[in-house]
Image (cartoon, rainbow, N blue to C red):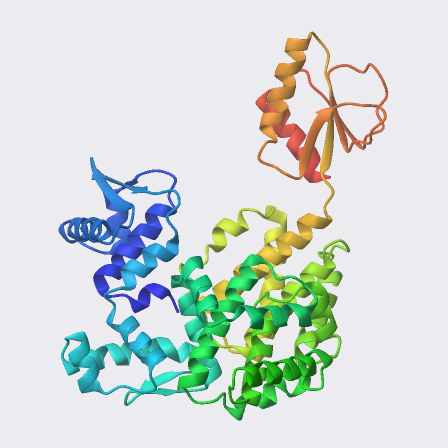
Length: 476
């Protein structure tokens, strides 16, 4: 689900245009913006004027400038996407419905339509569309009530508020609900200090759980079969005992589902450190089975470096856990697979694409994926595969043995370095007999070279010579 789907029509187009401009390094032609939005010139310019006026009113330091049939963005360098989304979501009927359901168990069509000052027919139309979006999370709204598992509702609100709540708001909520002691409890269990991001995400999750615990239904027993593999786990048992003690201190009713929900979140949201996750997964279960199968495949394809194996195993565990415990995603924008593919050598693209398809097939067995979910998982897998592949690759070292005066040598070195400047896997430095090089580029045979590849410059590093050097490197 894409977050702009919750916005009103005009806001949705404005957000799409903002994303388009933010992704462009320069001003874009109005024609391109018209193609991107599918609007007429008059309508698009009206939407831009409306947005600029609205942002000025809401004190959002951002505006779209139209000048000589081009559009460009003027915004504060410190403006976060959360501030933009919060402003654009402010007048959303769907978002207001969701907030209403977050704060109370149910609503009446008559009461909510009066509160929103819309007709009952309009409200019902928005509810129908909202249910189409919520289907990805396996939840729904019917007759003003929330349908579906409570854990999925909490996870949906976590995904939503993570995009909209600022760091300050999360911290205020943590202090208001006195959640610091609960987060400290998790750190003691993990025997590790959490990162600032993990602290914030955990605080947001516990804020949602605390709010829903007091007002909503308990976590359903549907989760028990999913977690049964982990209930004999030593970490799970320690978490259970710690939560019983914590909830008794605050006179909260202990519910087994709260332990299941906390465990599912900790297990899947990059909260716990690597050593704790290794300990938990050491007890077995379907997630580590999937991870093991994938690691075997990685090793078979020679893309798992010993130096990165712990990190790769950890991230695979997080990916599989996420799809094992939860359904759905809220995307801020369409995953840019093409940009990620540009980081991969052409001869590796097909291989990594084939590997990612195999892993996606594994995930589909756990949880059927939507088209956007499939794109997001593909992006995460490509990032992980690139990380693993690049970490095991030693840089290709080129030694430069130049002749002539200092100025001539410097100019040749500069030309060659500039040619390879965009390639992080190639390291260029002056030749030194005491160092090992994969290739030596020289101007005269003044000494023997031990490098596997050598190349003699005759035309001062001409375009042709640089192309031949490329061919030597990539063909070997």
